[in-house]
Amino acid sequence: MELLYETKNEVNTVMKLSTIGRHFREGFKNVTRNAWMSFASISSIAIPLFILGVFLLLTSNVNQFLGDIESQVEVKVFLNTEVPEEEILSIKNNIASIEEIKRVTHITKEQGIAELREKIGDPLEGYDGEDNPLPDSFVVEVYNSREVKTAAEKIEKLYEGEFITIERAVSEVVAQPEEQNEIEEQNTSEGQDSTENITDGQGIQEDQLEEIQIPVIESVKYGQGYVENLHKITSTIRNIGFIIVIGLVFTAMFLIANTIKLTIMARSNEIEIMKLVGATNQFIRWPFFVEGAVIGFIGSFIPSAVLYFGYAELVDRSQLQLGILGMEMIPQNEATPSILLALFVIGIVIGVFGSVLSVRKHLKV
Image 1 (tube, rainbow, N blue to C red):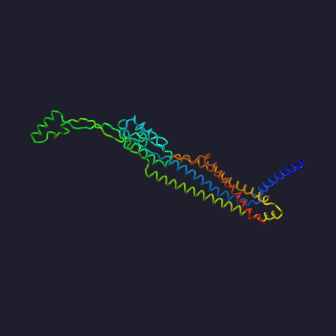
Image 2 (image 1 turned 180 degrees about the vertical axis):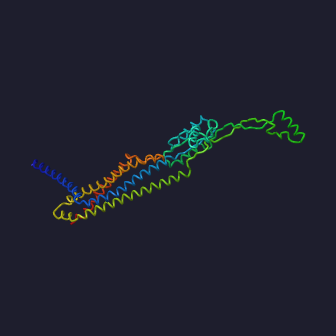
Image 3 (image 1 turned 90 degrees about the horizontal axis):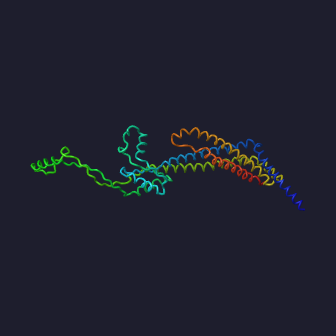
C-alpha cells in the first residue's frame, strides 16, 4: 500500500513537471507562432522603455552636474592683514569646530598672490613680501551646500566684536630748536601765537606710536543671492525631472499593457475553444503568462543593449569637452546597471501582468 502511494506521488510529480515544461514550450511557441502580434508587442515595450531609459540617464547626469555645481559653493573668510601669524591657526580651529563645516583650508597671502598672478599675469609683478596687499584667508567647505548661508552667519557671529590691538606709527611735523626760536620771535613781533607758521619746510617729522583696534575678520563671502537662486533652480530642475520620469513610467505601462491586451484579444477564440474542451483556467493561463514574460524580456533587452553601448560611446566622446568645463558624466559602470535593471523589471512585470489580466477576461465562457 505504501509502495502504491509513493508510486502515485512520483507519477504526479512527473506529470506536474511535464505540464510545466509544456507551458513553457507553448509560451515560447506562441511568440513565434504569432510573429506579427509579438513584434507589435515587443515594439510597444521597447520604444517607451528606450525613451524612459534615455530620460533616466539624462536625469541622473543632470543631477550629478547640479551636485557638482552645488559642491563648488563655499565660504571665503578674509582676515585682517594685521592679524598675527600665531593667531591664524587658532582662528582656523575655531571655524572648523562649527558643525555645518566640513573642511577649512588656509590660503596664505603668498598663495593668494600667486594664484591671482596666474590669472591676470604681469600687472601683479613686484607685489611680493611686504608689498603683498592680500590678506590671509580661509576657504570653507560645508557638508550641504544649502547650509552655506548658515555657516557664514555663524563664522561672522563667532568673531563679532573680536578685535586685535596694534600699534601704528603716526607722523607729526616738529620744528628744529633753532627754527623754533626764530619762529617764536617772529610770531611775537607780529602779534601771532608762537605755535603758528611751523611748516614742513621749517621742521622735521617724528613718528609716534598710536594703539588702534581692528576686527579679526575683514569679511565673509559666500555668494550672497547667487547661492539662494542656485538652490531654487536646482530644486526646480530636479522636481520637473522627477515628474517627467513618473509620467513616462505610467505612459510606458499603459502602452505596454494595452498592446498585450490587444494581442490576447486577437486570440480570444483560441482561449474559448480550450475552455470548451475542458482545459482548466490555470492550464490556459500559464502559456500566456510565459509568453508575456518572454515578450517583456525581449522588449526590455533591446533598449537596454542600445542604451548600454550608446551611453558608453557618449561618455568616451564627451569626456574631453566636459572636462574643459570641469564636469564629467557618470561612469557607465555606475549609471547603467540600476537603470537597465529597472527597465527589465518594468518590461517583464508589465508583460506578465498584462497577459494574466487580459486572459482572465476571456476565461469566462
